[in-house]
Image 1 (cartoon, rainbow, N blue to C red):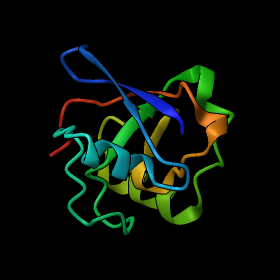
Image 2: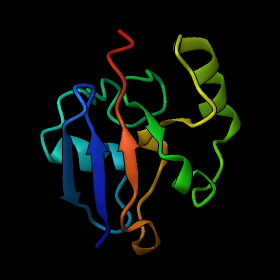
Image 3: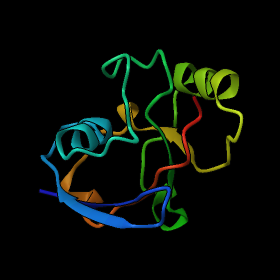
Image 4: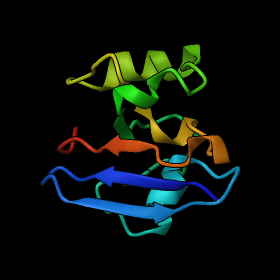
Length: 107
């Protein structure tokens, strides 16, 4: 069961326990992180689950596929090299300690 630390836009931090196999987006939603609105429910079609992966963890994740990359390119104004859609990151025990920053709303 990985523990994930979310850094909220106001810089407050919240560490939550997630389940192996669930998406990072679902872990955020299940733990009341309102800044991840997840309007499409995890279908990789809205980008309302945009987040920044801490640089120390970026290379430990599967890379973004073409669909995620295209959505980030078209929907996110403040896209950075570590931008990801949290609905496309599936958690494992290898990601215990993952740190994720949630930007101010893109919407």
